Length: 316
Image (cartoon, rainbow, N blue to C red; front, side, top):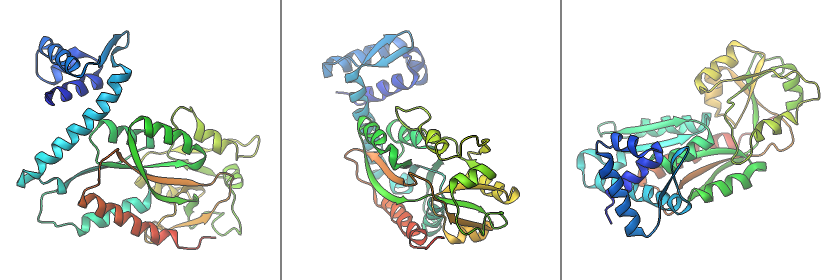
């Protein structure tokens, strides 16, 4: 079995076109078709079928491609170990939610790294579904995903279907993050119903749930008073979001607890904000059977350390 054919199959799945895949691989289409036929014959399965929407994997093909991607990642890792100029210990792709404690942990990890060594790190802040895709299809080492525990069964099924394993990083309640000048910053008790009825809410707007359209929005909508006019601003850059909270002091954002050093830097306060189902999880996701490398574990351990800075603080 030629593992180069694995790469061919993965490219066809990505493009849904043998013609486009052949072009991307700089090879003739007949040669690519022949290689895939040889692979299918050696496996005794049909990997792809032609449809009106292009070339898509069969059920057996989906399972094969999942394993093929893992094999290709491991081959890259082994080749990197044998190359002193490009050690995989210094290469990393991670995909994470837009969270202050994760960003702080990553910055500290880089600051403590050997500055004389080569380094190539991709740090992608995005939503949970895209992070899962990055690990499964795009060669990312691992990811952190975020979801409400009310939706855990959907994510568990989805991750199992993608042949991915998980490890809990943090379970917490969302806090209301706002400028110290916010009118509600000193109120005795805050609820999401009250805040959302009176002030603009800053949202990431990309918290999709597998199999269920609009599940997260429905959860928050159920906690707004009936007849409330929706005032939501969707922003997909964490740095811009923090600047927005300062510039528009009558806005707020729900977020995981933020390290105090970041709150002080941006002049923010964070308060307990009660609403039903206020239980969230940040979970580490990686390919089944894969062990995190030493450099990856060092970053994860730093995340746990920074998490503890925020987790053991008492919020009011």
